[in-house]
Amino acid sequence: MKARVTVTLKNGVLDPQGKAIEGSLGSLGFEGVEGIRQGKVFDLELADRTDAQAKADIEAMCEQLLANTVIENYSIELL
Amino acid sequence: MKSAVILFPGSNRDRDMIKALEQISGQPVATVWHTETELPDADLYVLPGGFSYGDYLRSGAIAARSHIMPALKAAADQGRHVLGVCNGFQMLTEAGLLPGALMRNASLHFVCKEVMLETTSTNSAFTSRMEKGKVWRCPVAHHDGNYFADAETLKELEGESRVAFRYADGTNPNGSLNDIAGITSAKGNVLGMMPHPENLIEDLHGGLEGRALFESVMQSLAA
Image 1 (cartoon, rainbow over the protein chains, first blue to last red):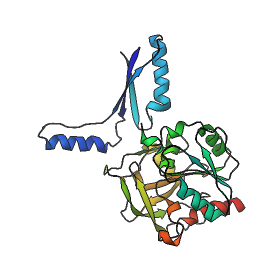
Image 2: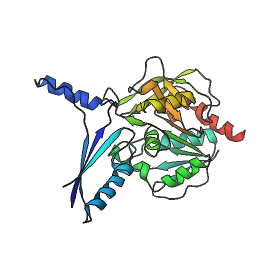
Image 3: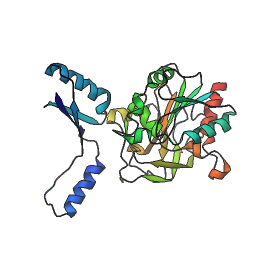
Image 4: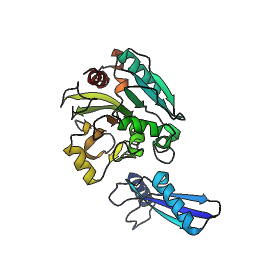
């Protein structure tokens, strides 16, 4: 089974990389971009298990490694 | 003072640290590969600078989950001294031994230069021989040194005088909140700092100011 984890910076945490990307889009002529926050996506392939078990397992992975919960939020999608 | 340096794939400041410890303590320094699960007996354990695991995922994140880390946490709980410099500081925050996180430098640039540091607290064993308020020159070399913590944690760090070093004279190289360059744990036996005191211990380095940090630990052990 497949799952996707999306990790994003928490509100209030500065994102200089997002700011630089925003500036670059502006210099390419894209107008009206009012903010960009850079995040990470992890695509996981897991041996079969129930959806509930998969979510619980991935949540543990996020808490222990995939996200730094001091500065990041995460969301889990089963695909 | 008996000391041990923990080694990770991608560490590159380990030899500088070992040399500094050998010179100052006058004793051989143990090295521990990250796959070990037990630490040799030592008064000071050091996580060196470098680029463990190529800074993959987040700087220090993978090293912080190494097999050796439970033993290091146990040693810290028992009051042994733990020092993390640069990548080692990143590991300490990732491992939960120190609060907060070290994020990409605000400038987005890797910075390799000398900054001015103010010793802002002399409460811990690492700074007891230093002079509070003294401003000294120290090298930094990092891409992710931008210290971040939530407002509550910052208040706690400041209130408990746990900010050991601050960038001074407008030399904050990375956007760190409150100009934080180094912090200690609540008990004061764990120090994480981005600058490299191990690179300021002999005349050829252009200064000896880094020695005071290691000498402080030695003196507190003797006390």
